[in-house]
Image (tube, rainbow over all chains, first blue to last red; front, top):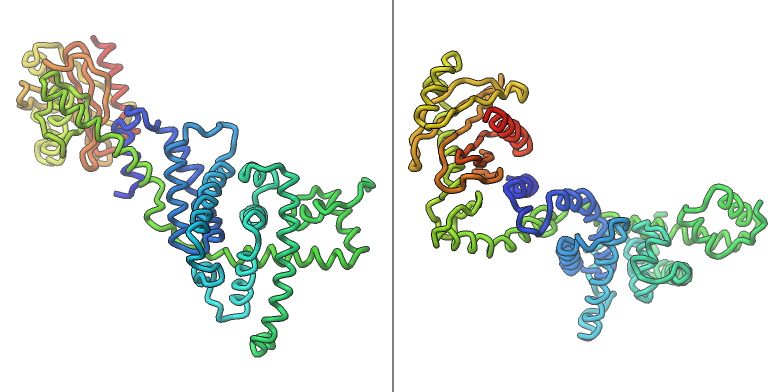
Length: 201
Length: 258
């Protein structure tokens, strides 16, 4: 029996009586949270740059959302709420990682985990931009990802990060500028390294 | 034109496509007149697109099983339930009984009492009689008064046959069933597509008045309750939502006939 069907059956059987979740809460969770999982994985992957670590984080995030569902503000939207849980977990994890020392340099992380293999022009561009992204300050990287990739509004991004909208805008501006410069630098470097591929364009 | 100067924030809002149409037009005009800024903004737009497509494969990946939300909610519920089950089983063992429809298998396997026992008997009767094509009932619907008299005599209570026509189920007939808690009466219904429901009724020594409680075994669902010393269990291979509605209807009819 698929988990969803098993779950609804178990709930019908009386799980609602144990005071942990109502049937409505479970339906809300499935309706509001489940569709967000791919995007949560994407944000986690972009921050952790490691598939297993990112999915670990998303799993923690989902566990936390389930256990704190009743604390969710009813007027707040589920997407900002989920991203803020994930973001806080990610930041803690990244700080732990940093404290434990440079166990793996960001450039050495397997980029194949992120995008298609860098065998084509487009793959190389993807690799380059993700590397450049890794070079940004963490606070800039988060803003850029939430706004540019996750398409959160500036206000939602501010909520997720717990900062004023003005700060979101200034970090966004710095992130874009820095990334642009890094990519332009890479273009020059890449042109030297891969002339035969560049000519294909 | 609003006359407001174009800000850096406007440029980013332009890149992120969140400007209102009026402001957007103003930014477009501004960029036409400032090619250096336009080039930078074009760079941001390209960067946004590249970043999006670089990370797009992640959302296309199938979600791994450890991120199955339904399973996670279920697992969490199960761990919370453990102490409940143990507590419920302990209550049964000290003889108070009636842990209200909890399925306790895998803990102590106590002999079910009260409506838990009735639910089990109803499910067993369903498994035996509902698939029977030759003689599912002993007394047919056409002899319903004979059935009512016999059942009422054996149960020592006046028994009424619920009418489930509004739910799309036709009364087929019934029979007497032996249980370890005395005689029980079985009524059977079916719809026109071969789905059968069984209702089992008997006197209750334990759980004489108990709210309706759902129960399921495999794909068989049941709703069981007791009122004024008589227990009722409705069982069928239908969704809990539908069966719940029918069980409510039965309970109402029983209350009205009393």
